[in-house]
Image (cartoon, rainbow, N blue to C red; front, side):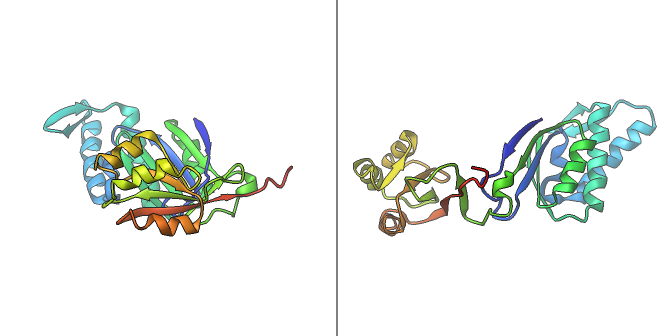
Length: 220
């Protein structure tokens, strides 16, 4: 299991995240537990009849190993009885579980062997994470991270290139903007709020704006 430091709140709300590998993770997409139960019950019936475990997927019968089935059944139980507030994001076979109840997540880590990631804030930053803020390791040269939506003026690419003291973007981002490509999700950095207001002349819609915040290490 890999451990990572949380430097920004997931979905502007959660400080902790685990990632579990399970080929049946899609059972839980959109927290559709009725669908999950239906699929698990089918597998349970096969198991009780000593039949090979198989699930219909993309019009094919796909085999399911016993450990995968057991884990997905136990995950269903955990989700149904959980008192913790949590969010699921499914990118099958990866399941990402977000929560501020770290005790519950640690319990899942102990119970399920296929947890591959655990994200938590450092002790220095515990309780300091805020929505629309990213904690950085040193005083930032650029104060804001702008993630693009739709409707970007292609002239923004040239402006950023000509004003490196005011903004910074990666080569792919600049080329995509200049070529009127699909820029949603691309990001760049701007120096301060004054420049941020100026950038609004080029950008029709942004997905989000995050402030980069340096928190001095109290152990130093």
